[in-house]
Image 1 (cartoon, rainbow, N blue to C red):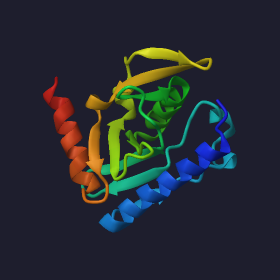
Image 2: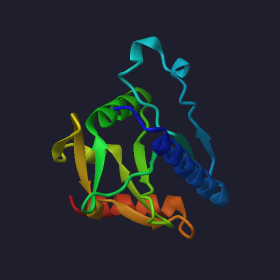
Image 3: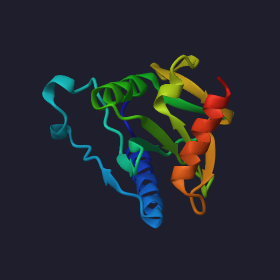
Image 4: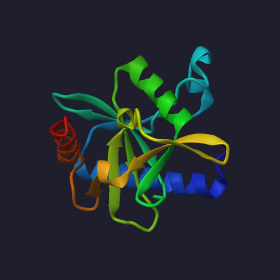
Length: 164
């Protein structure tokens, strides 16, 4: 699905907001170049790079795909193809991909959840594209102006594991 220029600009603003959050925390990170020549020819169209990789000392590296998405009735809508291409990234690089969703007009809040937590979620069709529905109650709301990302990640994982 083609991205409108205004949506792309809003996405870049959210990536800058996320980067500012990482800088305030002093987190080690790098930004993935999103140009097409940074993907091997045999994986083009099959893999999607997230936006950031964050080093968690003594834990490893986590990848984050930053989104500027409006919730629909308390639900995040994630393109099924994007989910599958991020799963390919996870499989190729053994790196968990997280979503950091910044809904417009909901500052200073961000919702965190893992790409793999979308597996088995309800599929709906929007404008000819299959999309996954992920309820707000399944994500972790974080105040990025005050909260540290690392404890938030552990809180999310603890909550997910408590459900099992």
